[in-house]
Amino acid sequence: MRRERTTVYLARHGSVLGSESRRFIGHLDVPLSPRGEAEAAALARRLTRAPLAAAYSSDLVRTRRTAEIVCAPHGIAAEPLPALREFSMGRWEGLTAEEIRAREPGAFDAWMADIGRFQFPEGESLPDVEARVWPAFEAIVARHAGERVLVVAHGGPNRIVLCRALGLPLDRILMLGQDYAGLSVLEAGGHSWVLRLLNHREPITA
Image (cartoon, rainbow, N blue to C red; front, top):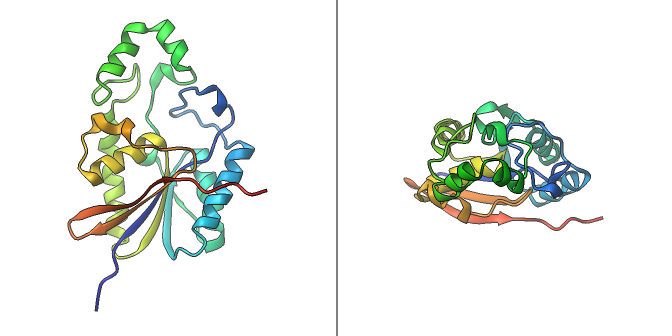
């Protein structure tokens, strides 16, 4: 009998209040905006027929609410995992890129020059985030081998998962799009992963 492959529906949370200002959010616990709620509902419609065995999310409110909306048709609840949180961006949280560049031009330029290893002031580096996100992802996959599972997290952690799954170095992280409520699908193929979908966004209906 053919064993079912493990499939991970990897989603980013919907738009948040104030997202139009393009501020660095990080660990700030901001809620979904009305648009974000609509984006999550559209994602839920996309996954209505997916036989989800389980769901997990970051423990921040924007991901928990997105997962709640997506999980409702399936009658399951997402387990919140702090390890799936967004980068801690330290003292840059709540600021725009322009504000950071004006306040700390040297640090901003250092970030742009070495994204893969830069340590956010009073926050985390990419390797720091990878060290908590990837083991959490592997544990989810091991727990649900041969099943379909939903993971709702953030742009940074999702890109890290995609990089690791596809064998890409972390300094290529920004090449992988992760829009609000974007859906990527990873399928286990033997000892490797196959990317079935990247950053797909469902249209919002009235």
